[in-house]
Amino acid sequence: MRRRACALAVALAALAAAGCVRVRAHQREVLAHPALAQPPWPEPHAAHQHVYQIREGTGGAAGAGGGGCGCN
Amino acid sequence: MRLQLTARGRASSAVALAARAACTLAASAVLALAAAPARAQVGGDGEQATATAGVRVYADDDRVTVWSPSARAATPLPRGLAVEVTTTIDAVTAASVDVVATASPYAFTETRVEGGIAVGLAVAPYQQAAVRAIVSDERDFTALRLGGGWRAELAERNTTLELTAMVGLDTVGRAGDPGFARDRRELRLGAALTQITDRRGYVAAVLEAVAQRGYLASPYRFVPVELGAAVYHLPERVPDERAALAALARGRRAVGARTFVHLDYRLGRDTWAITSHTATARAARSLRADEVVVGLEARGYVQGAASFHRARYLDDGGAPAWRTRDRTLGRMVSATTAALVEARLPWAELRASASAAWVRFWWRDDPLQARRDAVVASLSLLVPLRSP
Image (cartoon, rainbow over all chains, first blue to last red):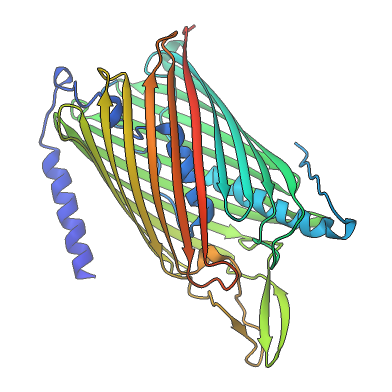
């Protein structure tokens, strides 16, 4: 339990530290690349998730939540 | 939509075939909807209206084949509105051991239709709210999903926060038994945070909670219970409440001029004591001046068993209160390898994407089937349209 809490704290700290970064619109050429979209292949992603949902016992948190890099 | 069941064989096998057909489609219906993300973003490709047509194929070595043509149209509208409509048809051909103990020589086909609509509204600069409805119908299963979400790009668009909620209202029926109807309710809440880390990548955290209540068993599944040397069968019975929590950590990064790496890890846990771990790694490469993107993906999944799942159920002075033959509630492992490609075609700004995946499932507690191999392929074409 303590290890999990520690890992969660590290992850949140890393996310918070990343929040200090400011990448401006004109600096997002790489971030706007289709390979960094979320998900990068929407149709195949949906097809695979469909199969996993049926054949596996747990799911969730696999969608495209988060909205990608905010480049569009 | 009427389910179409075409059984070739003796009339006496009709019930078993209907059971199998209905079971496969019921699972397909509800889980397809579960797979549909409750996104808060609605609209076409940026500011442009788009239409997408595609087809997916699933085939496995248990003689199950599913063809799923789908279509989607999305367009931005004046005053910050956006609309998206979707439809999917699942056409299943199967002779599976999923419900009965032995594979049937008879084939069946049947169809499920799903439709959805979503409306998005820009409520403020870089903020969008959306509502979404999805309905799926077949002879013995109807499913409705109603949801909404809010999405905001914050901190000079370096941070994206998305909150979603979706309610599920399902009615479970049973083929050949018009009097059988059971309710199933679902509430799904999600939160996702995406943070740009530098000019070359970003990280994301996704949290999703699901609460289900009602009839969560299969009306077609019967569980053998051993009483000494004798065996009798009882209907499957599982708790009528289930809550699950899933957390995902995601990273995407460019590691070279044209190479990209994606890493995901997901932890799942539910009140039936199932814990799962999923790891996905993907490498993508951009070719031909970004006209083509190819990718390779590897995914591994491992889960423990539900607290009441047993390989064998024994009558020890009475039948077990909870009993199931659902192999997805037992210990299992799956492995996937996939190849993906997306290309911008030289005609009318068309974009095509295709994928082929091989998936192997190992069910460690299932005495009937310990392993299954499946192939999943998809092909889709996106057409930009003129916005109104």
